[in-house]
Length: 198
Image (cartoon, rainbow, N blue to C red; front, side, top):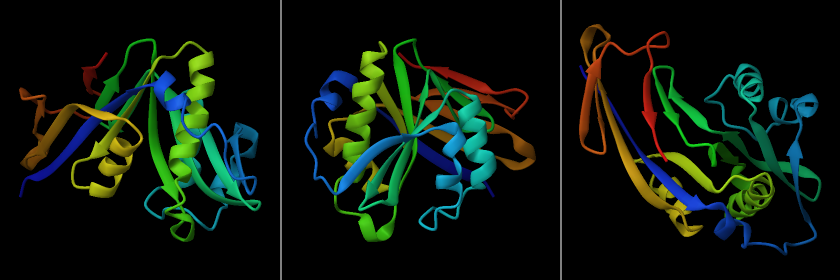
């Protein structure tokens, strides 16, 4: 039975994102979780059970990723990972951006803290820092079926830049349409498909 996935690539100018949420409630603290403090994420009771967090976090820190987090009254309740230049979407597909691109991925907000626009605040905070470092564009790959995530990205000013549709057939053969253009092969972690965006 074929397995299908589809993701939008959404994008926005960092300078536009940086201009939002410059003033926030004093009960909310936004700060970076440095690598030596990654236990704050790994040990947090409010986290998605869908990832093996120690390996996931360590791998992305090794790729120059950083995690920006929101604390509400001292409680870590939301975070997002940011990584310059590229995102490995699946173990067989890598989306590669130009020098000025930073990717936002692995966003999570604890259920009891949703609806407070924390992810928008985190993204704006990160945009200000990455803009100072010379980056110009934020990109994100968003599951086409995740209406809430697509809408949340659109609400902060990100627009759809591309569409990646992938089908895995028996024996590991894959067909991939990127903005309608067909690629096919036995792509895997040793022979990745690289998609260049700019």
